[in-house]
Image (cartoon, rainbow, N blue to C red; front, side, top):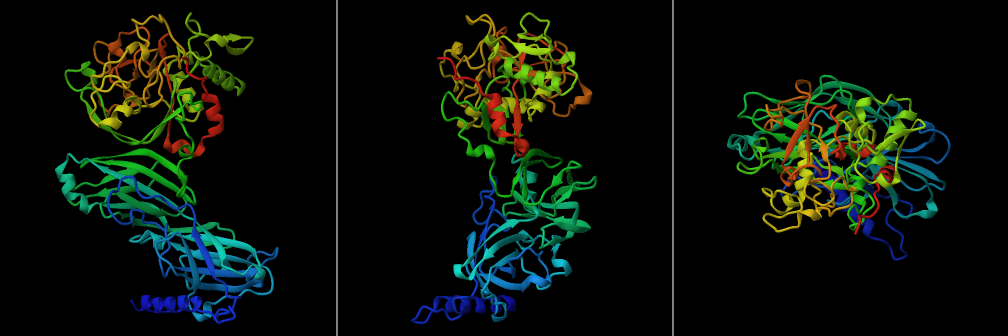
Amino acid sequence: MILIRILGGWLIGAILLIGCSSEDGQGIFGDNLVRFNSQLTNVSSVSRSSDVLGPTVLTKENWISGDTIGIYMKYNDDKPFSEENIIKNNHKYLSTESNVSTSIFVPATKEDEIYYPDLSVDFISYYPYKNTIEKEYLYPIDIGEQDDPSEVDLLYATNSDVRLSEKGNVSLFFKHQLSKLVLNLKPDLAIQELIDDWPTLRVMANGFYTKAKFSLINKEISNRSEIKNILAAKTSDGMRIELIVIPQTVGRNMYLVFGLAGNNGKLQWNIPEGRVFEAGKQYEYTVSIKMTWVEVFEGEILPWGVESKFDNIVWRKSSDTQYGLTKITGGEYYIGSPEGVGERNEYPRHKVDVGGFWISSYEITNKQYAEFLNKISSDGSIIEEELININDNNSKIKIVNDKWVVDPLWDDYPVVNVSWHGARKFAQWLGGDLPTEAEWETACREAENREAKNNDGLFSFQKGNEVVNYDDFVNYGKTSFNGIVPVNNLKSNALKLYNMHGNVYEWCLDAVGRNTIGSPAPYDYRIVASETKYHPIRGGSWKTTLDKCRSAARSCYLPEYTADDIGFRVVFPISSVASLKFEELEKFLNISSPLP
């Protein structure tokens, strides 16, 4: 409290002195006093899961009056940052404004004042201020206590070749130097015991380094040490967790523990070994929490405070969009059918938590798949026979003079006779994966889910019992097409997804059980790939009845199976965004305008 009073008193005095001037316009300190216009860059947005009033971002995203930064001033020369060329050493400046991303910083005391010399200089600055900086200008990082993450959130800024003639406030653009882990929590509100115990939630990070050294010369982090448990900070409603992490590679014994007072056991998430927490990046995940287990969904890994690059693109600017991708917002959705509707293997109708992702607006085409085959062939890869069956008469991809080719008339038709292995290998080559059943049906139903979370619609283009002409949207057994049509031939649903119903079945990623009549068993997420060889296909095809083309309809086959009515499309989880080459991806997925 004494410290606060001292800072507060000096702050008021500093502001008054800055505001006063003599008649000739000379400030009390003189025009040569250096002040800093300090801006926080890459500011994080508020949580998408928390609805509470007040701050929902806990790290340093705003300046507060009295915040202190350290300032070094050195000669502007070719020499490295060292005692030889430092003019002012670790002077303390403080913020004059609160709850802003840009604030004017003034000297904390008379002894901290810095004046412009008669030559060009450089400034180096950091936050939060430390009285003592170690030899070789190493800043001591300590993130062991995070009751207030903003107090350990290391920021760094420089400005070079500043001259007296420029006067004015020196601009400093501060950037985060550590990593940020964010968990958006989704408790199961149907479990009363969980809701009752929710205020007691504690999240502990285990196995992380808590101390290190940061070089004010070159920003390198070294001397990582002292592994211990860290209690993560949470918002007042407990729906968002934030943790500052020293950049490091995840080891075998690094995990998060979720503890509730009413739960004797502790829920644990083992962070995948080998994952790298990089400086200046934010790692955001959605976590579904029950009383006895947690599920962590793949999330977003981007520069701290930067929204997804996809958000800057107008994906659905018109009906003839060229980009070929549709964004699906992460969240909680219903999939499956209520009892009495559809087949028994569509039961139970249930909620799933799905992370945000992008899905190809069209089924993958012959042209795209042939390009993939040529690419992996030129790389020296062996084309496994199980990737595609070219011996079927309906396969439009052939080998001519050791090259995979397609008759241009069939370029924009969906590729068929592709095995699950072939579909997945293509998806991974492109930087994505096959959709899970939950992702596929969420994408299919997303438009109707926007209307109502419990919509029972049978088709994604139909609202409730709305009367529609199914032949406008679905290529199935009784239409006049009598075969496959181009991927952009029929009308899309409201999200500009084409042929989610009919035309060709689409492979999904999951492994599923199979009943005695050859259909997928009812939903059972305990099955893993090693326990079964069957994988689901969704959407129906040009050979099936309309009933098989419903949003919830399911079938399954062995992964090496191929047919002239099975194709696929690709998803890109948010977690893969940072590594995607957008221009190349857009060009590759480009499909000509839909037919009239």
